Image (cartoon, rainbow, N blue to C red; front, side, top):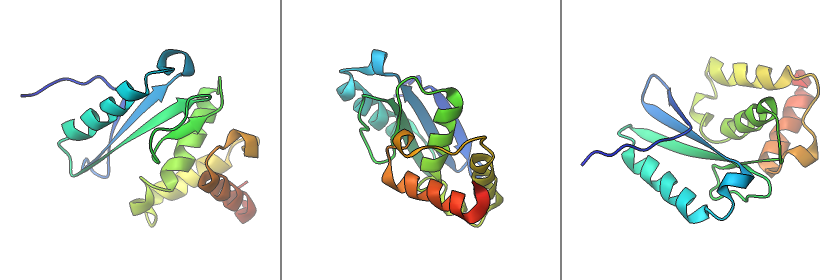
Length: 141
């Protein structure tokens, strides 16, 4: 039986062979809803009739990530800050198969084009911090 599942963002990628679902969990609306949020991730993965799919939840502080693929953003972050943190996180997981592809280089240059680099207290993921530092040291800011 088919069912509908509403998600925040649905992004087909890699020539439509992979599906990326991005859900934004604001602290006000998602406090105490961890069980539902986990259920929705599983339903999203089950519903995807694609070769591969990934669900990334953007969790606003003080909400904690539910899975390794989740991105933790500071409270009241701007859309630009969220985009930068999501892209940093995706470069380490979802976009890894495209490392030799132009997409990763464009993402790295987008991240480097920011007027000011991300600060340590804005990046909660240690691997994302290391990547941001490596991009800065490589001359990409």
